[in-house]
Image (tube, rainbow over all chains, first blue to last red; front, top):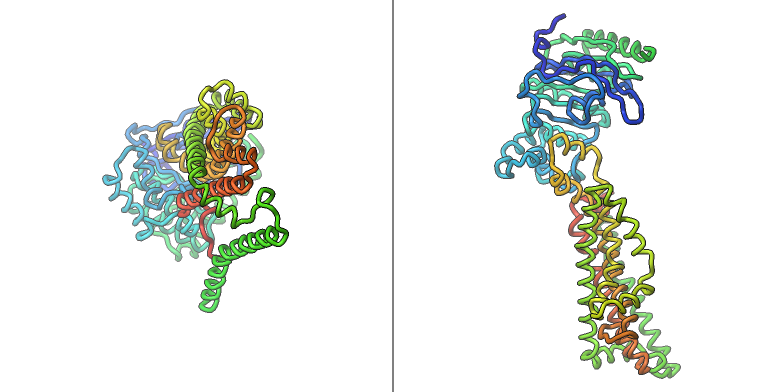
Length: 260
Length: 273
């Protein structure tokens, strides 16, 4: 059970609580270690605090209890975190190039200097030729790709994705699932992925953490040991179905859990 | 689809032509009817001059009207420029601190809701230079739409984008420069369009007030003066110039707004379905 990757994790959440100003306890005693090069999914029903946990890891807000530790201090620079929101969250007045350039621009990297990285990030998500397009000229899936390219442009070690494909149609979602998985495999990243889809989580993850609501807490953990690369064959295999059944049951139990 | 495209193109072209032709035709018809009524009933020109007479007056009195037009234009655009700079700067200040906004916004509202015609005589008493007084009046009217629209725009940046900027450690200035100001542009331009018309109204109203209190030489004063002399054709000519100026300002700012937003904002983008 002991995962060597977790011996020296990238980031560790230690009994993290988050209580909002409204008094709502969003997270209670969250213990979670995220290992190098994991594809970790936080799975749970709405209101279980999975997005809150992701935002805390990103440094958007502070926990009201417990600690978030970065054992390797070098890993915890702003450059090393990429964030993909549920919505594409693009600047409508800026071209694809300028949207992807944003994180570098904010770090005061000159346009000329950044050009190669920006172009590479755009190519990585398959949007060559669209650098000068405006977001409104793109489809929903393409906008999401721009959003992913923007998160990649700083070459982060940790990519945080908050239900990035929830609003997309299934065909686009499958395609982007494959692309993100390929990118994750080819780069040396760690991904923390938030979703409420059992099928998506099993397809992508190396580990799934199931969370229960009110207050948000971890109730189960599953490793998905199926080998990568995973493809359509995996999606229709018995092994995949077995995993889905196990995770579904786990999620159903989580939803029945009484408030702690 | 291949059949639908040309027919849609044709109907779009018709619409474009109609947009120019229809109002022009109505304007022409009204002018002709006006001229006919004046001629058929032999209405004396000191009661109601016909459009041809007004056009002639514009030509013959150009020597008097043109300097007046320039004065009105100068005051209008100067007031607008000060309103834009002041309104925008104050809105940026408001966006930086909620305390400043809470403290000062009510005064901006008071300035706006008090009719300018009621304040103008006071300003004319306290400010010696009539031109400066008129400028202040026009500025008071023009400045509020810029301030309130820009303030709203600066506050309406996407919350997730604000988070993203925060995530990458953006400075206050970077958030303003790359996020809040671009997000506020459509609002600001909407305010500018209103303020352009209002600054003309402000300068005309102030000139009317000043016309009785001191000396003036803008178009509004020419209207007053022509009224005293029963020179009704010149009154109409001056009025026509004010209208043209108003239309010109509106067209100018509509064009600027369109040019600035056409690539990305819903209001300026042509939909294809």
